[in-house]
Every structure is written in C-alpha cells, then in structure tokens.
Image 1: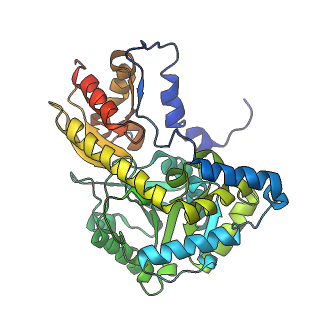
Image 2 (image 1 turned 180 degrees about the vertical axis):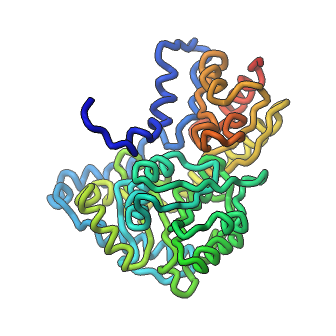
Length: 391
C-alpha cells in the first residue's frame, strides 16, 4: 500500500455521505416517499433576485472571475462587521473579518492557528462531527465535555478538563446537533474561563439567523480586549441558501487573522467571487425575506416540538434552529436503528453515535432530526412513522 497519513486514516468517514449510502437499493412507494431529515442544509435555491445578482456579475463584472483578496472582498467584510456591530453591540471594522469557503473552512483555519499535534481542544458533546474530523486529522486531541440533561455544557466541568496542553474551547450555538440555544450568561462564563486560562473561545454561530430569542445572544463583542479571547464563526449558507457557493466568515483579532491569512492563501488563495457577491447582495436586500425564513423555521421548530414531544416512549431533549435531539425507546443502538428506519419507516436520520465519542453511552440512545426542510404537515407524518416503528 502507498504511504498514508495515519491521522487521516484514523479519521471516520463523512457521516452524511455514509448515511446517503443507506439508500442504495431501497425503493420507496409513491404514496410513502422518503422523509430525509439527515442533513442541515437548505434544499431550495436562493431567491431569484440574488440569483440574478450572481448571474449579472458573472456576465458583466470581469473581476468576478479573478483571484480576490485572501481574506475576502472589502465590501463583504465591511458588511459583516456592520451587521455584527449592530447585532452584538460591539464596534467592529472589516479588518476584524475574514471571508472563507464556507464555515467549515473558517473552523479549520482558526484551529490551524490555535492547535497542533499533541494539543487539546475542549468540545461539548454531542459535537458537530466535522469539527471532530478536522481535529483528528490535525493530530489534536478532542476533549469531550458532556452536556447535561438540558443539553447545555457546564463551565465548571470544562474547568476541570483544562490541562497545560489545552488551547481552546469550542461552542456551537444554536447547537448542531441538539438545537439548544446557549444562554448569554452561560456563554459569558465560558468566555471568563477561557480568558482566565489564556485560551481561545471559538463560538460557531452558523445558525444565528434562526435563534428564537430577540436581541443579542451574548455580549462578548462588548468585552474589553475581546479580540484576545473570542473567535466567532458564521455561515451564509443557511441564511441565503448559498450552500453550493461556499461562503463563511470569522470575526477575530488582527493578529489572529494575520495567521489565518497564511492558511487560507495555501488552501484556497481567495474565496469564490460569485458567492461573495451574492452574500453582499443578500445582506443588503434580503433582510425582510430572511425574517420570513426565520419565522418559518421557528414555526417548524414548534411543530417538531409538539409532534415529536408527544411520541409515546420517545423523549425530545431539545429543539432549535434546524434540529431536534431525540431519545428513542428501543434496545438497539441508534447506529442500527437509523439504518432500519430507512427500510421500515422511510425516514433517513443520523444516529447519535455520529456526534459522540465511541464510548459515550448517550450516542446509541439518540437521533438527530434535521427538520428545517420538512413543513409542519411533513413533520406530523414523520412523527406518525416513528410512532409506527416496532422494537
């Protein structure tokens, strides 16, 4: 066999791709089509106005086909800074923002500046599997921080996990996979913990546009010297349906971004122009439309909470943004159940084992339900199919 990086070889396969393979050879009756609640991404294209803006740029803006600045176009960086300043009460400039090829790349870039072989990063469980995959590939030890029954991580527990090798704490809020929204005071306590120990606090807010709360979800950008502790991540994929264009962002201090620039120049040179142009157009023109999208997602969250919360024997642990975290009543592991659900219920969902360490007993007991692409009527059908599953 040819040489193979052992860290990459030891990293698990992409979970969504694995789940898609469960559909191979399975046929679904026309009156009982597959309900796919496995992936947290919009399936509809962007609004027509945004698509026209991208098309016009492709036709009439020569620079749309060239390399751009490594950290992203100035107009988009400035727009992100203005929006975050207004939303969080801070005072950002575009120089605090980097644009990336999706939020996953933002995470990888930040982690490349923070941790290397033998270092440790604390990540609440259940975790977002791509975060774990990158840390594994980089030879960084992921230290699990199990969430409580309320699906919230405990800063005091995190404090006990800090060692001289710890470099950062990662939070995702609203959470993927659980949907839990972390209270502002809880996020603040994690900031204080990170600051006291000289760590970075990485806050992934990919789903911030679908937070059910009003007002700022935290006040971290108003803290003195926030740029020495905080790194915020964001995605345009969910808000403006730009998944295929891969546009993400990070907010960080200037010294951090100088290091991030090295990583991005090496792996991408610059983010894609058309996606950035679409993101600027969306931020400028689609705020009212986005408010409607948020209202629809919140309505689906309510429908999911009602329908899934009423399932006999099942237990809905949390729901928010695109997700519900659901405890099932069967003896088998969720890894087995999820595959059986394709055949027996016509439902594709991801097992909790994809979001937890191999020895974590909570993984086999849970499923992640990504309900954002299923309307209220479809959610009711989903609940009916789950109710009809036998042991």
